[in-house]
Every structure is written in structure tokens, then in C-alpha cells.
Image 1: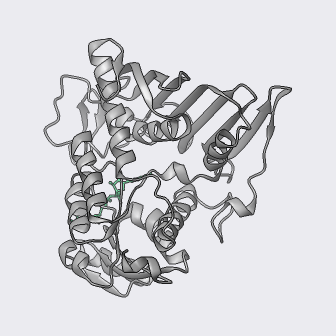
Image 2: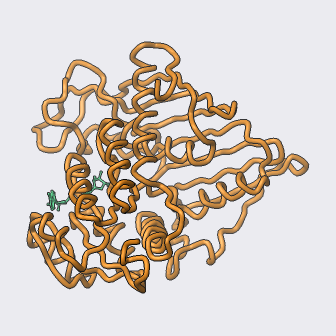
Length: 373
Ligand SMILES: NC(=O)c1ccc[n+]([C@@H]2O[C@H](COP(=O)([O-])OP(=O)(O)OC[C@H]3O[C@@H](n4cnc5c(N)ncnc54)[C@H](O)[C@@H]3O)[C@@H](O)[C@H]2O)c1
């Protein structure tokens, strides 16, 4: 057993201290009384120092390997750009540290499955940053499915969409250098779809088979680091239909250009006894809403999300990145300290990636694709 499991507090070190760490990860550690924020690390020393001062980290590193080797760091948080997630996570695993990584762990499923197995072999825990699993409304949906409130599940409809890139002059961040300019670059299905697929799989079980269509709607855009508008066929809208292994049906939409606010995640679950809608869209200072209908009372009624479902010190007016990440961090730290069952691990990240790949292949080959085949 890792010595962390018997301790009152968990020693945490965070790698990457910029925008998302500042908005989501670091507030979570600062708010949890069972966290000892041992260190922060960034190759930009000024950023690391500012974050240490703001969130109360004891030490500052500019070299991730040195921070991972710090004996007081028991859990490593990787909040750096995508291409660094896997190597930094593997370094943490090999050093015997628990690790939380931002998604995706890797842009291919196979190295992500390998990392999950390596963590299991090393006896450390992993968590992937699937933010929306830690929405109170989504967790209530999961409970209603598990306790039979909704009955047998027939349909799950999910969307992850907002108008973040409706304006072609709002710079795209995550285009790989040298990406081809003459063919469709799967994008919303990766950026937004990986979250949504994880939620749909968590709620409905394994996907058996998928069919899909994807397209580019805005052919010229500004790409971060490049001058002016570029011709680039970013996939900014994707639709998939899903056959679950259970026999349930799924419908999935991701979009960068659908008018609406952040984060724009909505899940509708229809079962033999009831149906529920979780709407994670920040509107008028409310992060999310939840509605429930029953077979014998078919009008959807609003269900209040009580204070006991929210992380301590938050309300539904707390900005969603902080609200959900405070919950995510709390779950992971408590899972480790109390030796609770794992959830939302690197394995789940790899499964989500596998399904993204199947959806892309289904579009390219215009056919049904069995997941994992
Ligand atoms: N889960 C979510 O909902 C969600 C939302 C937003 C962003 N993200 C992800 O979070 C991650 C971070 O996002 P961001 O917007 O803060 O990125 P960013 O590029 O603005 O910041 C990353 C920071 O990491 C530092 N860094 C890079 N390589 C490093 C290394 N090897 N060692 C130490 N520091 C290093 C950089 O100097 C920078 O300060 C990305 O992977 C992004 O996709 C996830």
C-alpha cells in the first residue's frame, strides 16, 4: 500500500501553471483541506512563481523531472500541452506517484491503454481530466440510472457544442504543426467529443458500433501563431449514431459553431420508467440545470441541485471550470487517501480515444464500425 493511503493529507505537485491550471486545477487543491500543495512546476519560471504565490505552493520547479522526484510529492498533476501529457504521466508512474493528466493522454488509444496497464502494474492510481463527470447534475443522472429510477435505458442523446469558433477570426489553438490543409482535420469530435463520449459510456456502458458524419462549415480561419486567415478544413461539426452493447441507442453531436454558451454539454437519458435531462450550459450565472420526468408524469420538472451535491464552498454560480474541477480534485484525493474504488482513469481515457477513432473511421469509410475491432 502506498504510504499516502494512511496519511491525513496528500502531497501534490502540479506541472503547468497557465490558463487552465489557474482556472480549474489549482483552485481545487487550494480549496481541499486534505491537500498539501508541495510544489508547482512550469518551464516559464515567472508563471510558476506567480502560481505558487497565488495558491500557496511551498516549492517552485522549472524541471518536471526534479519535481516528480521530490519525495513529498505523492500525486502529480499534468496540466501542460497535449503532446507532453503521456511522457510526463509515464515519468510520474515510473516514479511511483499517482497521476492526474489533462485529456487526451495521447492522440492514439494504444499508448493510453499501455499507460493504464503500467500504472496498474506500478500500483499507482490515475485520473483523466474528464471535467464533466464531476458535474453534480451528471452524477445525479448516473445515480438515477444505477438505482433504477429511470428503468431500462432505451436512448441516450448527448451534445457537446458551443459557439467558441463560430467567428473565423477567433484563433484556433490546437492545430498540429504541419497538419494537411487539403483534407478534413477531425477536431470537434476530438476536443469536445472525447468528453462527451466518456459521459455517454459512463452512463450507458460500452459502445458496440458507430456510424457518423463530419464536416467543415467554416473553411478559412485564424490559427494561433499563423498570420491572417488560413484555408484549413477543421471539422467543426460531427454527428454519430451509437449502438450500445446493452442494446440502447445513442445519438451524439459535437460542434464548435453551434450558437450557445460554454461548456455546452447536454445529456438526455430516456428509460422505461423515466427520463432526465442534465444541461451544463452557463446561463444567467447558473452553471447547470437538471430535469426529470416519469412515465406516469411526463412533464419534465426541474430538480434542485442541493448544496450537499456541490463541493464545499461552491454554489451553482461558481464558474464551471472551478466548480467541476474542485469536485474532480476532491474525488481523486479522497479516492487515494481512503483507498476508494477508482473511476475516470487512464483506461477510461483510452476507451474514449478508441471510440473517437471508430467515429472518424466510420465517417471516412461511410460505414458502421465496431468499436475496438
Ligand atoms: N478538461 C478540460 O475541460 C480542459 C479545458 C481547457 C484546457 N484543457 C487542457 O489543459 C491543458 C493546459 O491548458 P492551458 O490552456 O493551460 O495550456 P497553456 O499552453 O496555456 O499552458 C500550459 C503551461 O504548461 C507549461 N509547460 C509546457 N511544457 C512543460 C513542461 N514540459 N514542463 C513544465 N511546464 C510545461 C507552459 O509553459 C504553460 O505555462 C491542455 O492540455 C488543454 O487541452 C482541458
